[in-house]
Image 1: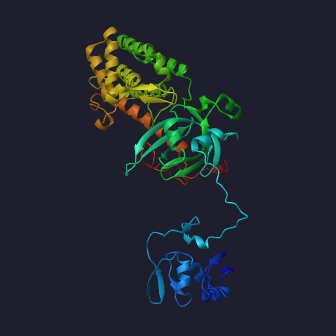
Image 2: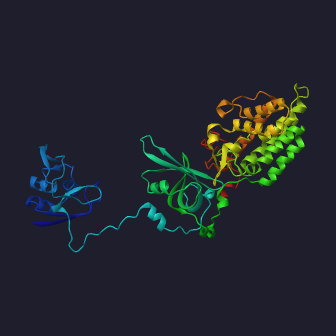
Image 3: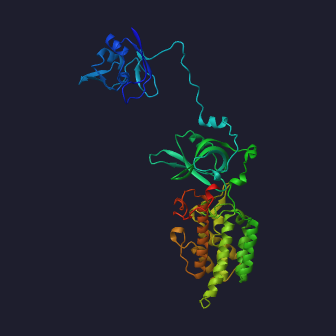
Length: 469
């Protein structure tokens, strides 16, 4: 006997609409008659879903066995419970929710052949075959929730491990004004391409969703491929993706050399400082001041040193005038020379890359403070100065970061070293604060505290019309 039961909207109050066609093969007459006058659609659904209880008062055991995969256990309070066991032979899974039906109840239509699913492409194949043709939007102009095409440089990629021991990659994409760092989990579609194909320092075109999260800005990458010269028509410009100083490096170098000539009165000290600058001119013109946090852009070292030296000139003049009776007198030559040379060891601590700078082995193992003293001693061997002045100048370099946790072997122990330290510190901190105010997208009068300074910064109420910009 073959009975087709069609039931539609549930009539009982509070039950959702239930639309399903049930094909019953071999059901007993009592249940077939009951099914013809089906008023409890919810009970019908329970009959055909394993793991549910079926009221014995409504369905006989034969029908329950037919609809419950033949797995009926003991009777308790007028209900049949399915025995938890592996489905016997003849059972088929027919829906995406994992429900198990007897093959005898599986609807079949000989006129509708089974559709074969197309072969699924890998994530890497999709990236190679899907073009990205839309005009790009700069990364630093994206707002929270905006999806767009953009160009960016992969500035960092690090393999890390979760608490569960699963590896993942943390990648950093950036343009000249914004940096976005986020994880690529090992089970993500792009994990294999990230691990095997993405190269640090390479330029990419992405289609991605930009999001502001509690962990900083992130990108949900939809598509990605290497950028080519053909993308220049869509706005691809490598120079616009690598951060650089706002000022011309040649002009900054000339201004620094002029300050040395004008404000260092001792000829031996002046020649020593000029020799250090001339011997390292090319590196000084290009290298960043750091890998992150402050002046971490092309020519950032020179920009920072010039600013610190100008502040040193001001402080030396101010405190020489304020404390004319200081003994020994404040040595302006050492203050200015210390401003120029305080970070000179970074020429060996860092090396330039396509996206900024990275630490050299010597930079990692020794740091820039001791290497700065080494450079000074090497040049002083060819341009000797008074031994006491050389010692004081070495101390300026060694003590300019003041705190041991910042890498300083000694705190400032001379007035000259103290002035250079604070000139250096205020310039670095001011640059950090400027960057935070420019890049933080937190709404309200205060920025977030996930930044290099580790604190919130008050920006105040927005000026009139700022929301429209």
